[in-house]
Image (tube, rainbow, N blue to C red):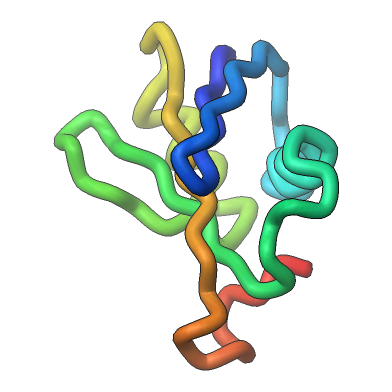
Length: 91
């Protein structure tokens, strides 16, 4: 599957066969090597055009099912420092 990972107006295009949410988080860490904030959350744009938050393996599995067969999946990395740090802290 092709991913476009977006953070601070920087886009990385990645081809990867990710099977887990943990794998997605590791890919983000590698691609943005230290640039990602300590507290962040991940969203994708679904087939209806909605931005959907990914917080678990279940969410990631739904993403893969929903967007199977699409050319690419756009993943957004968003700073979570202005919200409750106990919510969606992926570090």
